[in-house]
Image 1 (cartoon, rainbow, N blue to C red):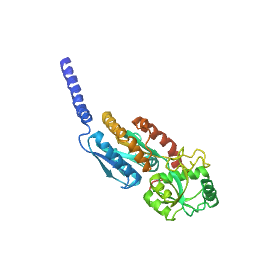
Image 2: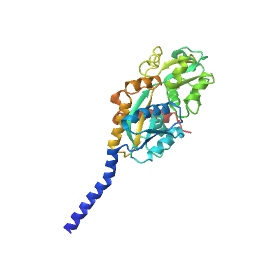
Image 3: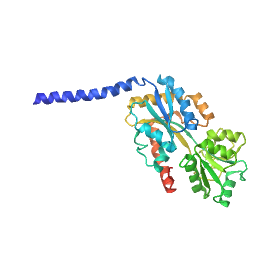
Image 4: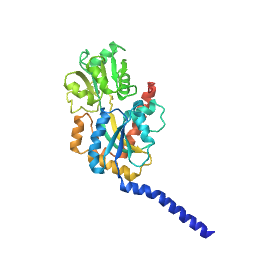
Amino acid sequence: MRFARRRFLQWAVGAAGLSAAPRLACAQAYPARPITLIVPFPAGGPVDTLARFLAERMRAPLGQPIVIENISGAGGSLGVGRVARAAPDGYTLIIGITSTHVFNPAMYSLQYDTLNDFEPVALLTDSSQVVVGKKSLPPNDLRELIAWLKENPNKAIAGTAGVGSPHHIFGTLFQQATGTRFDFAHYRGGAPASRDLVAGQIDLSIADLATSVPQIRAGNLKVYAFTGKSRLPLLPDVPTVEEAGVPGFHTSIWNAIWAPKGTPKAVVEALNAAVVAALDPAARDQLAGLGHTAVPRDRHSPEVLYALHKAEIEKWWPIIKGANIRGE
């Protein structure tokens, strides 16, 4: 009996080693083939632009190409769900933003947990927004805009990239912070909302830099304030919202990469190292010109991403649920 038990234990240990061996070999040889990076939005938007920019620069440190696949729908939750169900081998990744991983879980009944069903790989960028209005809007600064909105409740229309998009959530927060009321026009993306704002079909927006800065510089939009904690170097004469009279009002959209839960640590480390290598000083300057602010080098780690993700859920879920915002 003692001999049989010893043989069984030897077999069990050997079997465990065999099951772990393929995972270890996979991690050591990674990557051995192209990697797919899912973009949960249509091609041509800010997230897609960032993904393609990064994929090209990660190719050299990884030694394999990164193939971009756009899977849009349900505010990005379809693409994120695809990665939640993918094999945890490092060959299918998701690039997401604040809305896909923080806002959506408060608005949709998802079949996955955005915080706990993924392995954080790297925080990429963290960019604030601008409060902009059509050229013919009467106010000339943020204080005048707030006063005008109070004098004309529910008469102004703010454009968004869709129900539950950052434009929508940030607009809701702005109303709460300033005691103003206005309606929303929900578009299928930030670009069409920007076009209608330039055309004067809607009145204002809390919009991303990528679509707004070129229109501001061309004189097609009024800019009232920047939502960051300090002034934007691209627009140094534009005050922050706080400077313009709304204490504590800050917003930002951050981008990050995740892998499916259970992806080997060595694979996550290889991907993180490739991100750090890709975001060299020249790449950071180029991204700034595209409206993306890369986070400092010491903030690219998986641990920083997880902590930020958790803190953002704690901040935004009460606001979203309190406003009864539901995904379409």
